[in-house]
Length: 604
Image 1 (tube, helix red, strand yellow):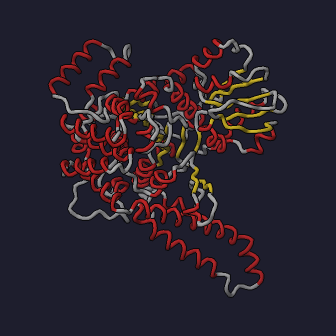
Image 2 (spheres, rainbow, N blue to C red):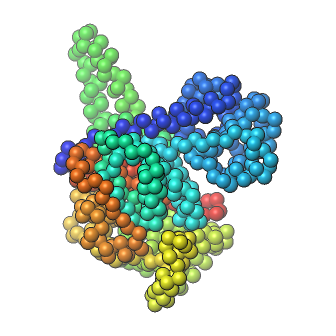
Image 3 (tube, rainbow, N blue to C red):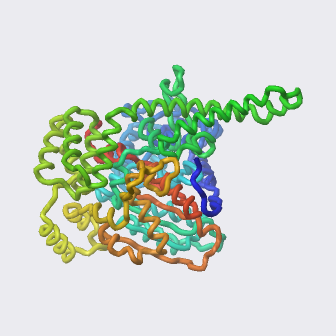
């Protein structure tokens, strides 16, 4: 089932060093409070902490008890408290009631002035020790690294708050220091350009040490360059597991329906799991065939015991049996997960949903698709799915006709509540769900904005105006880049011919196609029309054109605003086709649910 490799794939760098650096820094921070102490951890930092330091490591450094920071008063018998939090004002406020105790507040990943200002207002700034846990990068697998900043998307693209740009630049600088120097840097998007500038300044200010490069090229891409891909339903195995069971920091919790017991089990999903590593990038229609073959192979391995003498059985038990039992356990879990996915995703509703998505991507049967969306909304199937379809319709059609927009919006608010008025405002601001405007008006507005403001001096103002005048241009991009493959013959998902297999052969992800085209051309030459349709901000910098070694075949792709498992699968496929290896660095792993929930001010 493996895809054909045209050249030997280069070996990826060892990113475990990033984990060790984070652990060492955490230990240093804990030792700032000598003696026994209680550790309070913000809820969404529990999973990253689990990947960095286990309970025994914390106990070795005199952490007595662990607590989760929740919406209730902080109570502890210990005189020494250590807090591990994100730089959020409401969380800092909770700590201010801990009087007469020794406090150290470790802020992840950076400390902002607003937090200091709150402590200063309360008159405790001098009594509290604050420090940064500058833990920028968490390796989730051999080729996936996350900044674990889910708020990056909303803060940067909706609120226009660019405070995380320096953090992204620092993360890139850390990779450059450990695994660089990079030979070429490409990018597209306003945020990518700012991240590149931040990284460049840090490189200029820092000390340059000559070393052997382990990463060649870098590609930075903003999430708002391609909204279509995360809005499409995922159909590769890893993407489906994320959609249904929610993968957190590379770990998933399978419930009783999967484990066939009354217990839930946490499973680490990475390349160390031999079963998962072979099916993670496969279209779901191929997964059961692989699992049944794997079960037969395991049975054959077990059957080898028959006819063995005592010495052979001894060798079998000491060398093979443990591995076979582990593989058997994982195989049972993935079969259970696949059966659970089958129950939820092969129903008629899901098949019709996929058909509607494919019609929207191709630009066919739009009226029928609108009727399906209306039915979906009126049946109150799912708030997120209804919003996803509305946004996909708007982005692919360059906005909705005014009468369709008003009708669908009214039906949505009647079905799911008027609280979602603010959600519609947020989606409109991002250009995800908009009314079609007369083209002339937009052109005039764009030209006026261009004369009034300058990109560098008034970035936020141009962002505000561009959101009003934003066009998705998906149809034009689709034609020029051949994103929707035209073929009369049926697409064989068992032998994928291009990256479209991750969406059943219906669509090549725009983000991955851009990366492929820019790398093939060694820059944006010949893609001027494409970059114009994507609102510009593209760049290509050749740092060292002479570098010719294995590092040149290691390409680091940084997604600012989140990346889906489907895109990671597509890049793995592209890497095998081109004989290179893609390392994906992302601010967070995302999918359609997380992306839309970030824009909702009402809990789903």
